[in-house]
Length: 174
Image (cartoon, rainbow, N blue to C red; front, side):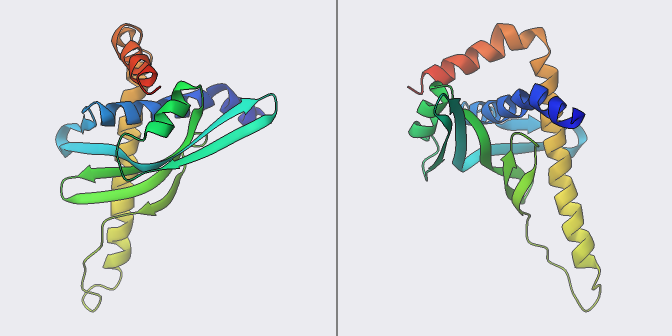
C-alpha cells in the first residue's frame, strides 16, 4: 500500500514532465544537451491522452493530429485536464525512436527503436545486443531529460521564468 501512496503523492511530476516536454518542443526548445553524448531532439508526435476527474466521474479524451499544434489538446490542457499519455519522437544523431510515455508510472509503451542492420550469418547474437543497446540509449537519454526537468522544477528559475512561461503557453491554447 505504501508504494501506491507514494505514486499518488508524486504523480503530478509525470504529468508536469509531459506538459513541459510539449511546451519545450512547441516553443523551439526541444533540443537537449547531453554533454559528451551530443544532443537529443524531442517532440510530441501527434497523439495525446488527457484526463480529468469530475463529480460525474473520470473524463478521458484522446487527441490525434497530423499538425503539431493540436488545438483541441491544448484547449483541454487549458481546461485543467492532465496529460496521462503522449506519443513522443526522440532523435539522437542519425537515430530516431518513437514511443508512448505514461505519466503515472513513466512507462514506455509501443517502443520503436531504429532499425538494426547486422549480418545474421556473421554474428547471430549481434542483432539482439544491438537492439538492447539502442533501447538502453533512449531510456538513459529520457532519464537525463527527466533529471534536467527535476533540477529545473526545484530551482528558483522554475517559479520566476519557466513556470510562468508554461502557464502563459497553456492559456494561449484556449
